[in-house]
Length: 429
Image 1 (tube, rainbow, N blue to C red):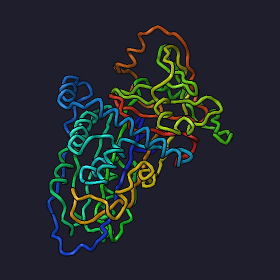
Image 2 (image 1 turned 90 degrees about the vertical axis):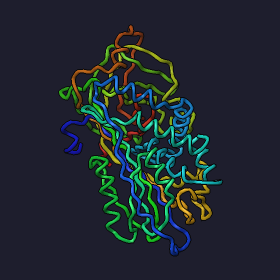
Image 3 (image 1 turned 60 degrees about the horizontal axis):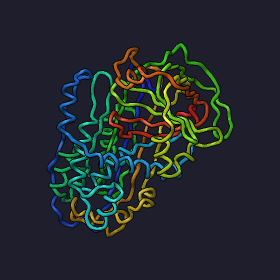
Image 4 (image 1 turned 180 degrees about the vertical axis):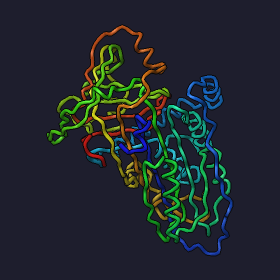
């Protein structure tokens, strides 16, 4: 893994997400809006400050309907994205949701209807409020782990931008705003630095600017946490991972055994999870032999089943997990159009809540990084593991991940942060 992570990180996932709007009529003599917002992140609490965390949660209610909408969005987009991908693939539905949510709050007419339909929410006010409260609940920055979401607006300095939109994204999405010249190559360098800084240097994307570009909305998510129960590095051993093509790969496997833990047995898979110190978890889904991971992600219903269904069991779980570390680049414009967001990509797109200029989406891309290793603290107060450890064993599950598998990273409230397929742990990109 990368040197900066070797010091203290057991698990990390991070990404940049970009929406680009291109003006479709001449700029004219529109006055520029130089007002900028450079927001501060929410207050972070110490890992063991349970009282402050509870107060923060109570003061930022998130409707169950919103969490359900976010899950539905995750499952719909996942099935479409993975149908069009191959090999190792990592995707963050949370990042895509937040980026689209910002744009949707400035959309109108048919454009707004289509975007709000995909996001499965009634209107921009509810979307802004629920996104804000979820943001505050998810935000984590302590001595054990981080889940930092950052948003930004990069606006052409010669275009007039609606101040209500800028203020709403600042207040509800913690979005910083920048007035820039998209004809200057240094603008792309500054944007890349902003992304790298917010992702702890784990990704360093390039931005190829277009002369007609007037706005970029960027979302980043940076996550790391420590295993609630670390893997013993002395037990890491070389063994064979069999790719979907039947090619044997000699790679490092982490090994552990839990005498009493939870698992689920589905018709086509076995699922179990490993706890993380800040209360989240990493879920692993092993398809039965003869079934590919992408078969289990081929429809929204199958994605939901893989993550939620199956006969629950409790007992001994034997873990054998390959170490892996890779990046993914995704182009998502076609995905969104297949899911019903078409008006936003047309010349008559309505983003009148953002600017009076005619503008439309032209590019949607996401870059991600994911890596796991043995590291973490030796002892844990993670409530979920302590709870599962108190139940009597009733069965056994072997999570021997020696063939392609699915994984997901869940926040403490169950929000799906990342989902991916590991086809070949020996490939680094």
